[in-house]
Image 1: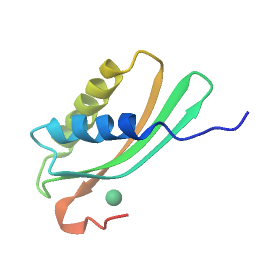
Image 2: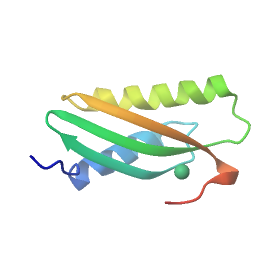
Image 3: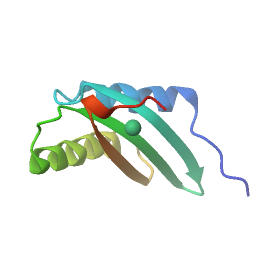
Image 4: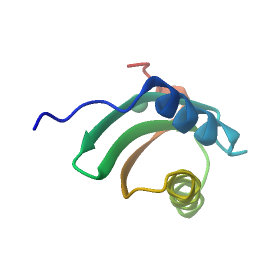
Length: 90
Ligand SMILES: [Zn+2]
């Protein structure tokens, strides 16, 4: 069975949810894959350079929870955190 990407509307929802977080300035590099019943999602969040590590960690957890809550199926999320000054769009 071939894995495939999530539908465009689900990818847009993931982007919109992440952007709703007040500490998230931008989102890029969203990659998705449906593997059996699990949705695999990767994304990069753009955060203030001087956000503390504990705060950045919490932002990632909060965004992850917001996304998990919007899907009924199992979701596996990997979030990469980029300081704004070193963001390279990809
Ligand atoms: Zn990045």
